[in-house]
Amino acid sequence: MTYQLKNRTIHESGLVEYTDDGLVDLLLSGNSFPVENGIFNSPEVEVFNEWAEYFKLPNRLQSGEVNHEENQSNWFVPEKYLSLDLDEFFGGKCKTDAELERVAIELVMFRERNMESLLRFLIFLVDFMEENKIVYGVGRGSSVASFCLFLIGIHRINSLRYGIPITEFLR
Image 1 (spheres, one colour):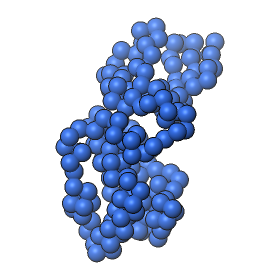
Image 2 (cartoon, rainbow, N blue to C red; image 1 turned 30 degrees about the horizontal axis):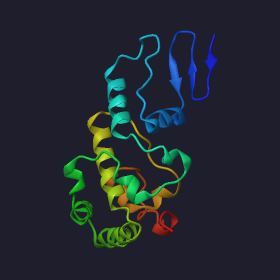
Image 3 (cartoon, rainbow, N blue to C red; image 1 turned 120 degrees about the vertical axis):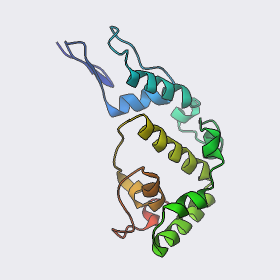
Image 4 (cartoon, rainbow, N blue to C red; image 1 turned 45 degrees about the vertical axis):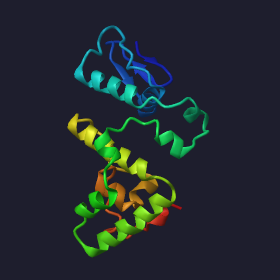
């Protein structure tokens, strides 16, 4: 028999399958991955539980009352990322003048919105996922309009190549 719960399915074999939303909810709640029937003792679960500890967010996040600047100060980000020079980071990844120009435009927009901490966090997040062999998406929605997010590795859509204006992402 298979049991369908809100954010997971428990198969008769004992295998628990979480939906993407279920895993995100679990991660943002700051809770550890539930060990059901002792079947989740693996390195992947240990990594997930580390993430849950790192990214414990205040309850007001779930209520929709988000102050991005204050909220970002609560995120776990190693010191080497907090002091990362974004101009140098992105400039070092650009190969053409057009790419440098686009990065300069986007960085101004990110800075106007006090989102530099978010960029540093995302650089850390991608590095962490790659170092721990965690599979993540290839991008979707308006985020693919950001060339900076492409350079970080958040998505794999080169917005310059496809002529997607940054205004599709940062309005």
